[in-house]
Image (cartoon, rainbow, N blue to C red; front, side, top):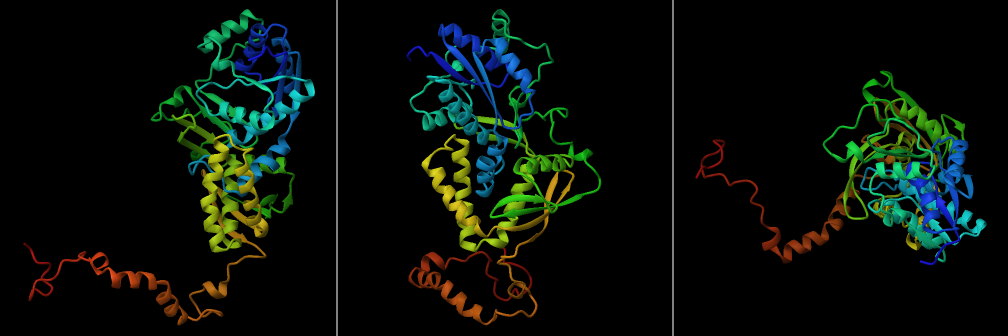
Length: 424
């Protein structure tokens, strides 16, 4: 690639991205490095992050608060789509990366940068997520991925490099795993978690208490939705960030939201990840149950087919793809009637829906009751069943040799009566 004059780096303040700053300046003499920090709710001390970036050699540091946009423009669309990767993962990291990349691109344009850089390794999904976002949002900018180029092969080598270049390296007890936190979740992977048979350390979790040590008394809460978007908790309207934060606290106190999975990475390997998503678990469960009374059968069933595809697109870094935007249009149409409230019970790590209510509910007690109801004549079922089964009946008549093989119960021997099946 051509020698870049100015690089916008997705910066976190951790060892990797701190080392990248002097590495870029050393590899491309005269190059300015602009550190870009997107606040997606990771809870860092951003004054300290700015100081560290400057001390590492950054020409400029931009910290951009995008927590509200993270919830409204990324989390809530995925929630409305019921997007859960491989049935378990609520996509906390995958949803944040395209937004961080968007912030990075916007800063790069404002600073006149001609390249973008990230600190992702060559084995993970995040390199794909960042770079697909770059290509979609700023295809004219060059991309630099130091982990795929430099010769630093271990954390110890990174620390030595950092110290040699004046990069501050705090002396702390090394965590035997890596962490990534934002407003939606906290993830853990690597280190001792690379053995899928190993139990996660009890002191690892930060957002949720051990379910065994959670309160012995359950807690009920009620979540209100408007057109598929959560708006209030226990009757109190909250802004999107406050709503997620409140549910994180309340659900986390009951040990809700822990997931330990082995997932299929986009790059071809299996990876073990442990996630804490307390508020997200509550919202996903509540939203699903509200849809059961507000969506018609065919829409509900078809949406269940779309959900894993939507999740796969997000997981694979295709947030800015035409298909994801097209699916958003479908999802938005399905959510027009998803307005109501859901009551959930939090207890010992479980989130259980115990009630749901909607003004436009399709559930009819008169139709569903086993007692005497109105609008349903039991006799009508006979004609419905005959018509519904007509294709099977015709096929059986035409192909008796394919459909007439029963043979599940042995024929009784003549005269044996109740003596049991014949023995041979």
